[in-house]
Image (cartoon, rainbow, N blue to C red; front, side, top):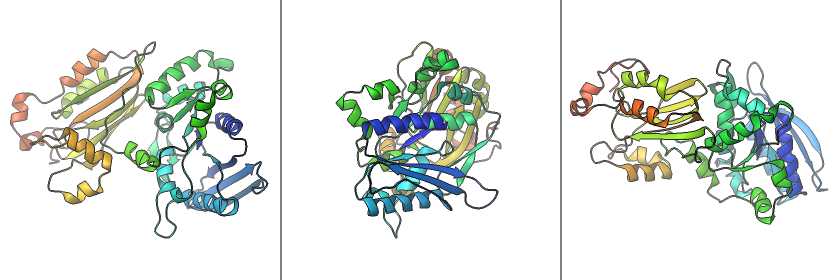
Length: 388
C-alpha cells in the first residue's frame, strides 16, 4: 500500500517499489466526491505481466466495496500476484484498510487471498510542513464507504504519517532545502515505529531492506491496525530529542480537574505539533475522553466507556490489546482509569509541561470527596457539570 498527500510523492513510492518488485501490478485509485450519494472511484491497473493488461475504468459506489471487487477479480484472473495499491491523498489510511480487510458474511475476508505488505507513506517536506501548521480549513477523508468527520489539514497530514510502516522522504528539491531535515525529524517523532528511508536508500538497499519493503507483514496486521485506532492505548515514545524535535509523555492515575486543565493548556500546548492520548476527567468519571491535537487545534471528545468488572459484554467487544492493557493497569478501586498523553513538537519544555499538567490533577482532599462531588465540577472544556 502506498499513500501520500501529493501525486508526485505517491509516484515516487510506486516507482521505487516497482524497482524492488518489477513484476508487481499497480492498482492506482482516485476518489471523486459528488454533491450527493456515492463518489466516482477511478482505477488504473498496470503491470508487466501479460495476464494483467493496462486498464482504466470508473464506477460510482462504495470505494471499499469497489476495491474489494477489483482485488478479488485480479486474484481470480491472475492468481497469486504482488499488487501495489496506490491510495489517493484524501483517504484516512488506517480506517480505510481496516474496512477493506474486514470479513464479510458473503465473501469472507480479503486476507484469505492477499497478505498485506508494509504501508509506505511518502512525505513531501514543504507541503507537509505547510499542512501541519494549517488548522483554519476543513477537509474530509474517506475512511471506508463514506467520508468521515471534518478534520483540519494538520490532522489529515499527521494521521497519514502515523499510518505508515515505511516513511519515504524524498531528497530536498527547490525550496525544500531547509524544510526537509525538519520534516524528517518530525515524522520520525510522530511515528517512531516506522522505518525512515529516502528514494536513494531504496535504490541502493541491501537484500534485507529490499525484502522488508515488499514482503508480507505478520498475519495479525488487521488486528494491529484496529488496535492503533483504539481510544485507550499506550502512547508511543518518540525517538530521543533530535535538534529541538522531541516527544513528551505524561500520565497519571488520578482524575483531572477540567477547569485547571483548561488553565494548563497554554503551557502544555506551546510548540506542540501533535498530541494524542486519553483523559480521565473528574467531571466524566465513567467516560474515556480522547485528546487529539494537530498544530494549534485541540479536540477533546467522549469516545468510550471505561471497562467495568461486571460488564462482560463490553469486555468481549473490546480488542485483545484493550483487554490486556486494562489488566496491566487495573486498580481494585478505579479499574483501568488513567490519563496518558503524548506531545510531539519543537522546542518543548518538558518539565514545564509536566508541572502544568500535574497541577491540573485532583488534590488528595478533592479525591476524597468521591464521584458525586467530582461530577459537580464545572467543565469549561466539554461543557456542563452533571455528567455522572
